[in-house]
Length: 355
Image (cartoon, rainbow, N blue to C red; front, side, top):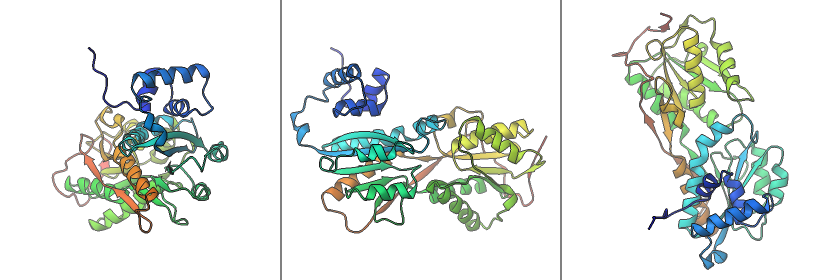
C-alpha cells in the first residue's frame, strides 16, 4: 500500500496540476476566476488528499491571505516566487494548526481596488497581507476594511496595524561583522533606492554597522541604483555605475541576492576576481545563492517562520488577546560560503584592484 503525504497544502496540489496556488484557492473556496475544468481537477485532487473530508471545515474561521505584487506577473516574478513561496507555505501550515480555513488572493497595482473590493467582510474573520512591495496608501485602504489584520514584510506608521517583519538591521550587522572578521575595512554597499521598507532598513543597518565597527563610510563606495525592471536590466544598470573604476572596496554588501549575483557578473566583466579582488555578500539566501560560482555568502531569512508568526498574531487578534500594536521582527542568520576572501587581519589601506 502506498503511503500518502500526511500533510498536503494547496501549493502541493498546484504543483501536481501545474497551476498557481491562487487558482487552487479560488477553486477550493468556490470563487470565480478559474474554469469549470480546472475547478473539477482541483476538487478531485483535494478529495484524494483528504482536504475536503472534514465536515467541521464549515465551522472554521476564515482567514484571507492577500499576496500583493507591485508589477503583477512582471520580470520580478521569479525572484518574488523564490523568496516568498516559503511564506505562503508557513501561512498554510499554521492556519491548519489553528483550525482556520485559508483563502489566497493575488493583487497588483492595476487590479488592487477590484480585488480588495471583492473581500467579504462578513465572511472573513481576519486578513493577512504580504505587503513587501505595497505602498503605504494601499495599506491604509485595507485598514478601512475594519478587519483584524496583520501586515507581513512591511509596516505603516500612519495606521495602528500589527506587522511581522525580518530583522533587517540585525541581518546587515551580521554581514558586516563577518566581513570585518575576515579583515575587510573598506566595505562598499550596493543599495536599491526606492520605497521598499526592507531596503530602507538595510541602508540604515549598513550605516549603523559600519559605525559600530568604527569603519569609515565612503560615499563613493555606496553604489545607488533603481530600476523598474528585473533581470538583465539590473546587470546593465550596475555596469553603468561600476565601469571606469580601477579601484574597488575589498568587499561589497548587496541589498539582496539577485543584486549580489549581478554584481559578481559585472565585476568579472570589468576584470576583478571574486573573491580574490572583491568579496560579495548578499541578503535573503534564495536557492540561486548556493548555485553561483563562487557560492554566495548570504544573510538567511526564515520566510516560513514569518508566515507562522503572522498567523499566530492574527489568531490572537481575532481572539482579543493582543494589547496595543505589535511589530515583530524575525531574527536572521549568516550562511557562509565562498564569496568572501579571508584577508588574514585588518587591512588599513588595502583596496581591490584589477589583476
